[in-house]
Length: 196
Image (tube, rainbow, N blue to C red):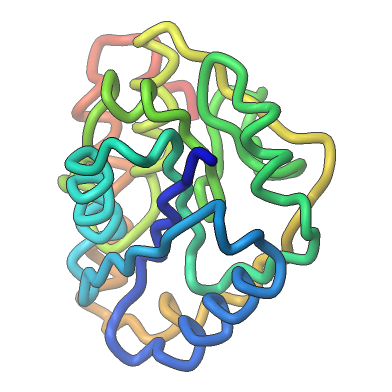
């Protein structure tokens, strides 16, 4: 059976949330289908934590898929992973209602990627600090590589209120707010600069 590496990006202090997330995954997922890797980022960036997972994922040939599940997600469908895999047609897939804008980017609090997508698109961009806009950036990079952005027909999960962002210092909040400017600078003079 092919396996998926589930990446849980988290920060120190979120131990209870992470324990609940892992318990929830175990209750709703065939244990033969996955392994879990914790992407500690200690408020550096969401991308940093995800990239720790991706580096491990790419070093192991037994995984045909990679799935981000943030520690504040509650999965409520026992077919969640199969459904995401089924609808990850020529690109990554998120649950229903996790597609943003005009279906032109994915909100990656939970997102499945076939192996070939990660191999082609690569690591998340760590210029985006703390969190936000790295998923928009990765969506753009997927589309520019010729991949589709996909949405499953069911919601599959509940996104709890983020306790992580509530713990940010004023300095960290200000740094996070700069991500939109970092995005616009990265895509300056392209169609993406003023898209959102």
